[in-house]
Length: 189
Image 1: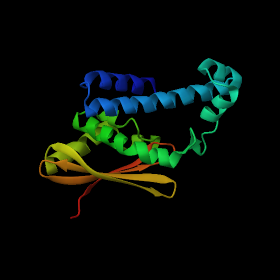
Image 2: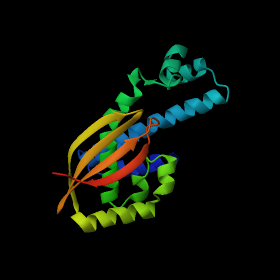
Image 3: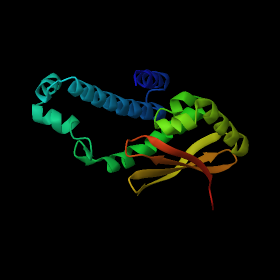
Image 4: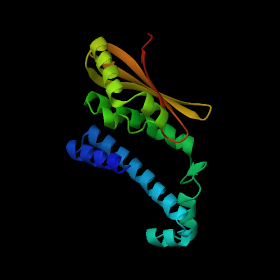
């Protein structure tokens, strides 16, 4: 996770102030920091740290620390995780596509779950993107987006406008908050 954090800090620094790219990079950085804090709290608990100790370190009560970091099965800060994922996933898809467009294929895989990361290494992802660009031209812009829940997964579709056509980027997000499926589909009009 440290490498991901370093990449996102670099992406923030590399993007222009006030740009959408910077906003997206900052949001992704915030999500990674949140995941990092949760991982560290989990590790601290596994090593015997008390909720009182964690709370004191964070300026929270024992109960507030437990509520924020100890009950992650269904909710995060009182918000259903599926709802939270539906809210954040479209912007995370924008970031993924931006990484692809910039040739940052390793960074594009940051949200992949382990099976997808294994099935789609950076070299293969680069080949897929290059094939798409050969087929429909350079990427130009994002279009409409939709999100829906299928079983316990969130499916996000974002229209991508290219020089000579459009495609739909469909991502399937597992309950873990990671991408379990990635598809580029023709737009049927």
